[in-house]
Length: 269
Image (cartoon, rainbow, N blue to C red; front, side):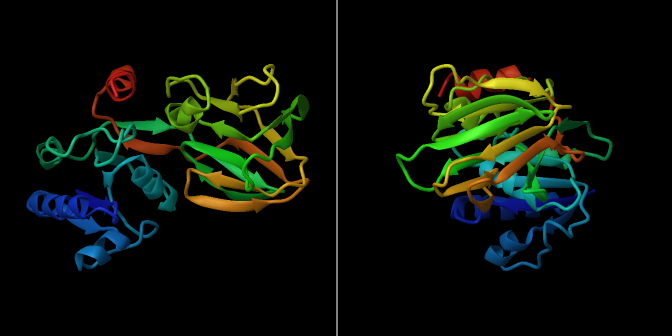
């Protein structure tokens, strides 16, 4: 089996661990190295978009997992090894990973996670596994939005920003902003106003088959950010369209319950 190893590159401990893991796995699997990880380790590497791998093993936190998913042209299953703060997208702890991966064979179970596709003024920007966020570029300045669902006006509000999340992203920024925790088995799209001016502007969840259209009415500078990885500048009248992506993210299913992770990683921090 071909395993691509991706490590966060700003942490020497993570890089050392990744190299040790690759050495341990080389006897039972073909080990490939993602380009930036390989450059830091002085090894030959391959780009995320070009790697022909059966599994991507990511050493890092949630940001590293999102980086890997964003960089893939065609999704391959991902297994995250937690080398971060919470690591909600990382299924294994470093001590458990070598033994688990050495015995792994083709045909392992895979979990599909819904992503959202985002267009800006009719042109595709990208896809997000966690969220798309529209935020002001100037602190203490509120933005005004209108929201349509399937072409029907649904809400108009002022806020510091607005966040559109997947169920996977419901335990990330959306949760911090007051949104609900959603089982990833429920495929819906979360709309969460950020610090809204009116108490009536509340988070909502809509069916994944619907299309959201968000128009920025303010002249204040703002940005669109996807999974913390991609950023686009917005202008007054910018229209952001959000729909379910046809290409879900893939994760190796280690058999751990979502609610067990909520209990251990969020409620016991």
